[in-house]
Image 1 (cartoon, rainbow, N blue to C red):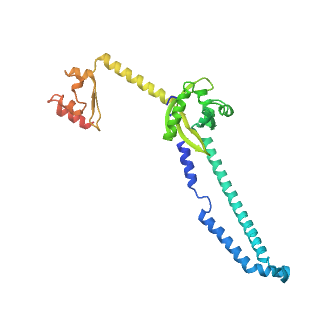
Image 2 (image 1 turned 30 degrees about the vertical axis):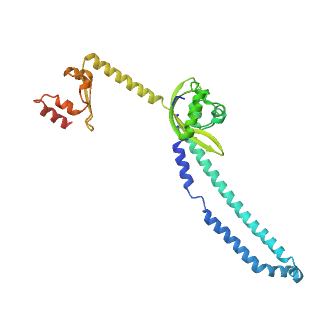
Image 3 (image 1 turned 180 degrees about the vertical axis):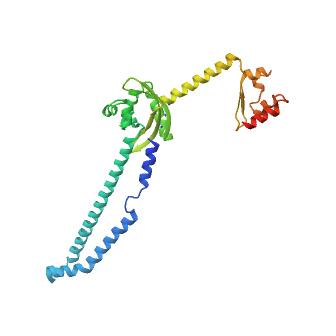
Length: 293
């Protein structure tokens, strides 16, 4: 990999989901639990003696251990109620977490950007890819999850991978360019976004990447066009100047300076320089045309 960036979009989606209400607040739940406990406690204290006498007769009710039995029964009953309530609450939270995970998984799979997660502790092996990454590399998902960075980017030496990983641990985020060797033999340039991820005590590098072949092609075509333009100017011996109307900065080429008897270094790159070199008789008309522009 030639240049170093989990998907920002995915992160923002996950952050928004975390902010959504997920049921009762902790304070509300605690108040509910306390209310249940107090209602059961007061009812037990007020009615238990009467209930014991009705069911067991006066002898048991006057037994020395009656309070102990009542206390144990109270603990068992309230404990059972709280257990059932907490269990139900935990199951509901689990279901919500599972639904959220499914939603994020679908977002991840539907993303047009290839998403990846690497395990640096396992020699930078892929441990997660989405469907877009599978399409990009052209390998089955099962095979991709056995591959390491060097398998699709042989030029990316292990020493450099370790060095970039150390930097990522410090910066937490990076963007860089690289090349990927695909299953069909093509080598494509990519821009990679990498994030530092810590989960359950383990460290990972994850994010997304994009095929930038079209961008690289456009950049090369622009460079070629500029080169042809400069060659044509040089071959024709033409002097040129380029005026930035907003800033006033003006760029002259060397031939333009020579045609006026100057060295390029003598001329300030400013519109006022050009204005001073216009013939005084022509200046009003020229400036009028400039104002029209």
